[in-house]
Every structure is written in C-alpha cells, then in structure tokens.
Image (tube, rainbow, N blue to C red):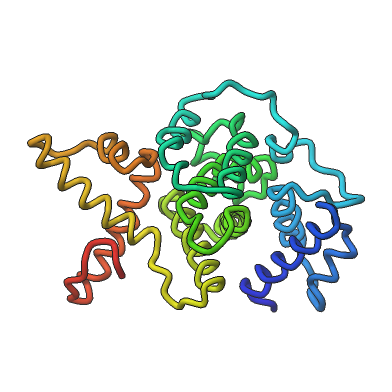
Length: 281
C-alpha cells in the first residue's frame, strides 16, 4: 500500500503536469502520475477535489453540480457575506503590505476568487463533519470551500520566506484535503490549521534546505503571548480575544486556534518537565 507521502508527491507531480498542459489534464495522464497504484474511489475523489481547488480541468470528467462554488464564478457577492467574510477580511490590508510583486497579485486574485464563499458557522460545522464521514460529497465540498480562506491567509503569513504564495496555497489545499480525510475528532479548526502550517513549514524547509524553518505557529504563539501581556498592562485587566486578535492583525478564529494549539504544545512540554517558552515544542 502506497503511503500518504508518496500520494502527496504524486499529486504535486500531477499539478505540475496540468500546469504545463494549460491547466488541463486527462485521466490517463493522472494514472501515469500514479504508476503501480490501484486508486480507490476515495483517492480518485481526493484527486478531483485537489485539481478543482487549483482550477485544473480534467478532460472527459464532468464536474459534479455541487462542486466547489467559487470555481463556478459565484455571483460576485457583496464585500461581506454572512458573519464570516468580515472575519476573513479583518486586518487584511495591513498585513498585505508585507507582500510584494507576484505574491501581492496572487493574494488579491485568491481573495477575489473566494470572496463570495460564506464561511462555515459553528452551528453548521458539526453536521458537515458527520455528513462527510457518511460519504456525502456536497458536505465534503462545502467543508473544503469553507476553509479556503484559512489556507490563503496562512499562505500570506508564510509568503516572502523562500516559496511563492501560489505554491504555498497549493500545499495548503493539499494539506486541507488530507486533513479532512484523516480527521478523527476534536477541534477541526485547530486540526486543519496545524496540518496546513506543517505542510507549509515542510515546503519552506525543502525549498531553503533548512531542517528547521521556525514554525509560523510557534512564532505567532509567542507573539500572541507578548501581545496579551502588553494589553493587560495597557488596559489594567485581562484582554479579550477580540482585542488580542486586533493587536495581532489576525482573525478571532485564527487567534483562538493558534492559542489552542500552543496550549496543547505547552501541556506536552510541561509533562516532560521542560521549561521551554510558550508555543515551542
């Protein structure tokens, strides 16, 4: 049985082939990227979803009518849809200043593509996760598209460190889909954030040849701790999640997830008797 790393590597090769072929690929070409594999129905579904996320057309394959909505162009949407789009855009202009050249153009393009997608609410998520486990394709697509914004925002934070943003988004999309397949319970937002960041860290390590890239999550966790301490001194009271998120120029969801991941890491460190700084393994 081929392992997950081999499957991810083959997906990467397939994406390169599709790009060289004008954003189109055939099913025989897909099979050529997986020599010796007996692809299961689930693996084919994952391949199609990954190609759809990266706007690749599979010739001879008819897209499902419930395919990812932003690939159908959406309706242009308002600048904010539901409560979630506002979260996604919060602080974006300021942090976008860190991007230059192609990364800036790429970031804006992705924002345009996903702006009509309504984020998944905390009430919708449990039902989607249950439906996905039961093999519901519409739920699976909804779960994926509802988290595309998170992939883009994380890629923005990693951009400028040696890997183009477009490549980071591709790595993030792959990690998102893999995480959806592997999720067994717990906090889904925390889980996918960790998996997406791990994939982007690995991409940076491979590109730069460094074994330790300095995890974005660890750096952000330490920054959150410092920002929280500063706010406590300034306000004379405990800072709210909203205030910390605003100081960090992150969404509240992202700030909460990073804090949860970091607290999990801290618990592991303390269990081993280490006094390392908050957020580091």
